[in-house]
Image 1 (cartoon, rainbow, N blue to C red):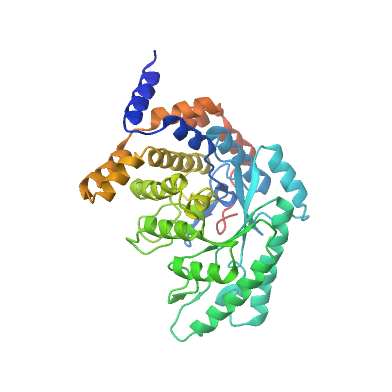
Image 2: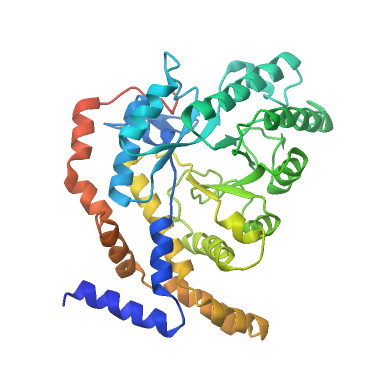
Length: 414
């Protein structure tokens, strides 16, 4: 018997002694999916500099190739989000894009409109005081609704850079009214059986006010639009110290948690590998999600099973591929630990008001070394048990560097 098999069997014995259904944990891990972003495979950077990386994807097909490779290594990243117009085909042949993705064994996930890059959006998009620019932004978003149908996408992911830089620059209530009116128009054009995910951000790029600054604003607008409108939580889009897992719990209970943009940050930006700075926070978020999956309470249970788990990261000084694989694996590990929480013990301690016992049960689960379990799950799924080592041994990095070379990075996302 190998040391690896022994470690797995000892872990199973330990978990089952705590009342954890290991077979159910493994089944959930095999169903887990993390959507990767097309833009995360391209050159990117900060507002100061975009650094070119040898082999970074420069075309949509290359981004799809890279996404397929990440899925091949991990087995749980079978869809890729696209950004329009960054991923817009020159001939508007979305059928060909879809066919190419499917030929690589992946699906197109969320469609992300871009209403922040053009010069016209200097004072905003849907919140802009100019009705003509509002219409320009609205037309682009409605175009993306049409593109969703062509790409078999079921999610429209909306993030806006809108805001103001100076007090008095514009009417804050006026901007609110514009957004509400236009979001309702977008909602009316959603494809059947799809969702509109409304993302928020505490600040940036505007310095004084942000039109969609927090989860409460996104939640309020989702309620005004309808049941297919939900909130998208980006881990980096909060003030320091905000309890994100509490936001997640609230939105789960309200049936309005639509999805995540996973990433991490230390200070004020949000493009680091998820779990690289605060793995305990990621675990606590997954603890709320895993707990909701197992509850009998509705709509939390149904909502938890329909959350869109997406990465939104830009790898500026490191390679794209290993960073993306690490990100997927960090989500997998956090989910595994959350599934290993002994729920009956935790609930009993909570109901008894035993503060330290409840806290200890949760933190003990965070400390569990789930790597033997994950190796076993990957082996049963037919994917590499050590995805990073397998990627390094695959020769794929050398291949894309040789074939693609180093492209100019003149502003990020190119």
